[in-house]
Amino acid sequence: MEPLKSKPDQDKALSELGDETFMSAADLRKYMTDMQMAKAMKSVDGMDQAEKARQGLIKRMAEPIDLTPERLNEILQPLRSKLRSAAERGQTELMVMRFPNAMCTDHGRGINNADPEWPSTLTGRPRQAYELWRDQLQPVGFKLSAQIIEWPGGLPGDVGFFLRWGETKK
Image (cartoon, rainbow, N blue to C red; front, side, top):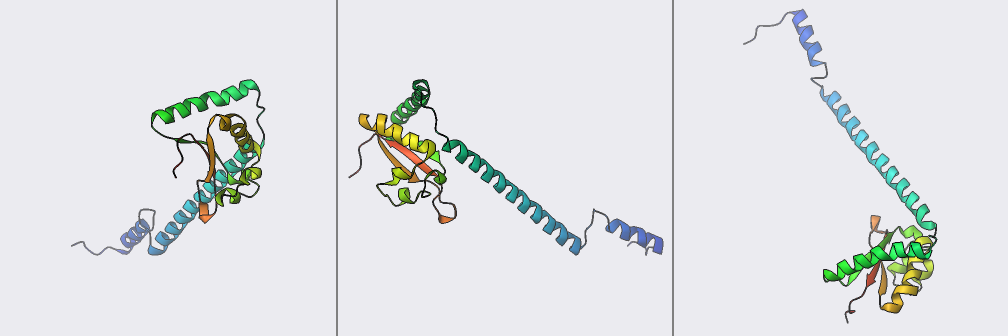
């Protein structure tokens, strides 16, 4: 058993207990709250960065591509390769484009509701992709479907374009 400490020894012990190696319950609660706030701020900062990136993507996708014959070949060459690889794996469908629903004037509602007029809601590069399918890929037998592929908060999110070349199920 340890002998009773004198007043100076008690003061020294209390000061040691008060440093960062030991926290009172109130200090620990404050520390926990501060840590939770820091995590929440980091999460908010992350969401802010993600939203900025999303807005940048929307801005870029709103600008049409100059579809020169060379640029068209740059797009179609890798697409052919991806389609061939998918077919070799026995797939009959391939997602060829993903874009924010903000690229639709109705934010994807027409696509979600299978409205036959959904293509008229497309803007920017998704519109160009649709027209590329309509003018070059549909005549050689490819089908195109658009689907909402993400549902943040239960609302339509990103849209995917899928090229299909297999038999349709009846």
